[in-house]
Image (cartoon, rainbow over all chains, first blue to last red; front, side):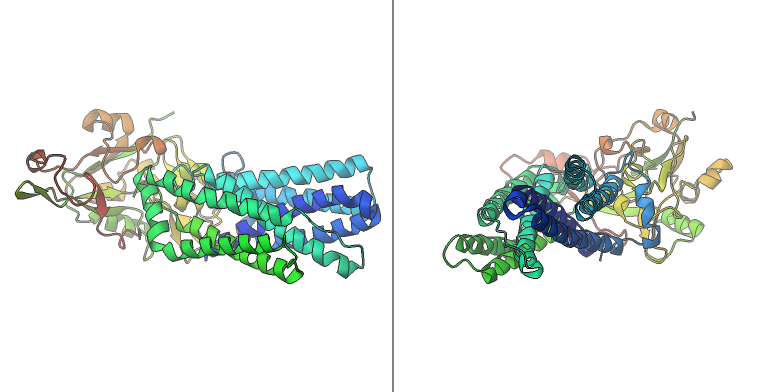
Length: 284
Length: 221
């Protein structure tokens, strides 16, 4: 239960941060083109969906606690605990993004203050990503205490966030009856991010091979006990690259995009399961 | 500030009777599955071919480990709820009323000291029998050892009496958490057969690699 809940929490939170970044960029780039009123509607609509992802993430996080009624106590030790800082970042990100959406929806505050709220929320998204990464950089767990952890979390954030934003951007205009918006660079971005993931995987495995007994135990877990999951993840990544490539051809269609989002999300879920499966700590 | 307490363990005289483990479990009324002090059965070595002969370096010993009340306790550092603290006398205590049961300390500790109580939904760990210490009595595990393989006291005193902590497999590097542990290493057979080995000789596994024979009992899979 613990790892399943954490797979859900980390992926949903990262998807929320990535989608927030992408939707904020879309808002800033398109509000002149489609008009402030429509852009505002899209941004707030997207924000509601991103908020739902964050709420789901926090709900999933509660599932791994032995005493969920005491969950508020996770805020008690930001002085030394990266996990506590992670929870602070999640709550502050929620607050800043609610503030931004509120200012936008109720048309309150000057453009300067709205920009400040948006900038603060974007930076808190980065803070969440960093604190989440460092929560896993335990000096006693070599598979996680690696430069690969923050970078692969960043890639997942951009990949899942971009795909979630792509879905929202495709779905929002028909629902609201507003002009359509496209994310033209999304397929190329997805291909590039998946290529970076292809690169990280062997580098991570090589790094584990040359380190302590716990690192070598983690390597054995990945390439022996969980070999099938590893192979399946690689296959899904190849399929996702192929589907993203097809989106650049005349076969581009909403169904194809949905298939890409599904396959890429499944590959990321497997990647995160493997991340937790690589747990092997120093010592007894 | 008082000199921090430490445990001493003599691996050369431990017979693996597990009286310490049982005394701890009894003293604290621990549920099934919880062992604040665990006796690890460590095994290693094998048969190696040396020219026309086969020689053995098989060895086995016991390690009795509880919380090592580290000077740099990683459990205290990572606990998001601030439920674990280190007293002035070095004893690291966990307050289950403040624990949220995230099990993060269990992930981080290289000695497997914090253990999860499924029924309570919180972590538990060795208290160094702080209540007994405060009354000037030894911890239950130390008092129970029939071989006098366990001892406790201010770390400097233990080091003066027994020497500093030596590297013993499979214990982690001292600098990870600076454990309050003084150890006498296990007695090993004289290295006569191994000295016959030359670099080209065949042998199973890595030299010095050890494994834990009673993984299930001590809660390590």
